Length: 56
Image 1 (cartoon, rainbow, N blue to C red):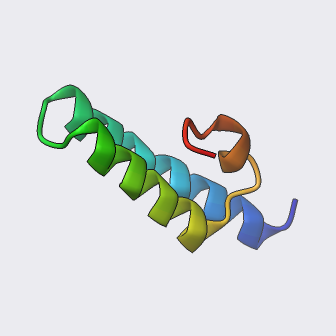
Image 2 (cartoon, helix red, strand yellow):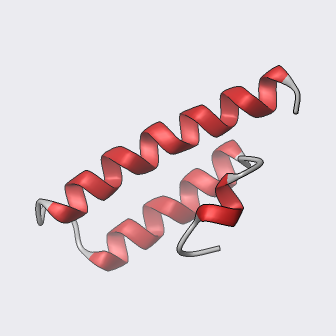
């Protein structure tokens, strides 16, 4: 895994963690969470993110 791939993985996981927290607090809906996940997957193209994503 290259440094860029590792960086993208970390950024994806940090961002999706925030989105999951917002979902758990009721600040966003399941549909909004799924949309955020899709956008983040496209933006960061994480190496491991697609394996862990609920929407992949």
